[in-house]
Image (cartoon, rainbow over all chains, first blue to last red; front, side):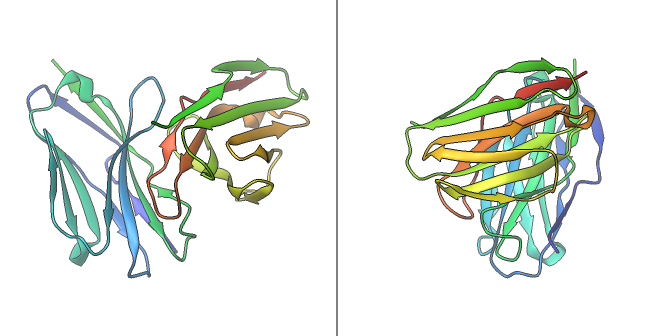
Length: 116
Length: 112
C-alpha cells in the first residue's frame, strides 16, 4: 500500500538557518510521482514541486532544493536561509498506479516555524 | 490561466442541517476534480474525486455526497450534518492522472 511518512511533526528555526524537511514514501510501483505542497496560515495548499520516479536529479529553485533518493525512498526538502514567510505546514505526497493514478496520498505534514 | 473558486469561505451550521459547498474551475476543460477534508490537526483526507461529468468516486463512506453537474463544477453536499463533519474542506483540480493538483482557498465548516 502507498504510504508517506513525515516523521517531523514540528520544526522551529531561527531566521537565516537552513532547514531540511524529511519525507519517506512506500510504493510497490516503479512509476510514481512525488510532490511537495506548502500550506500557509491562510489554509490554501500551494504546489511546490513534482518529481517522477525516473528523474533522480536534485532540483533547486531559489532558496528551495529537493533531494530525491530512490535507494532510501526519500524525497527531502531543504530551505536555505529560512525566512519568517516560510512558516507554514509542508506536505509531501505520492501518486502511483496502484493507488489510482489520479489520487494523492499525503503525509501528515511538518509544521515549520521560523522565528526572528 | 486557471483559477479555482470555492464558496462560501466560512460556514457555521447547526447539527442536522443540510450542506452545499461549491467549487468551480476556470480556464481549463475536463479537469479531474477532488474534495478533501482537513480535520483539526493537519491530515488531508480525500473524500471524492471525479474524472468527468456525473462520474463520482467515493473514498470514504460517510455522511457526505458529491455531484458534478457541469464539467468545471463540483458540489459537496449533506442532507444532515453531524458534529464530526466540522473541518476545512478543500477542492482541487488536475489536468490528468498523475499531474499535480491545484487547490482552492477552502471552506471552513463548523457544525454546532
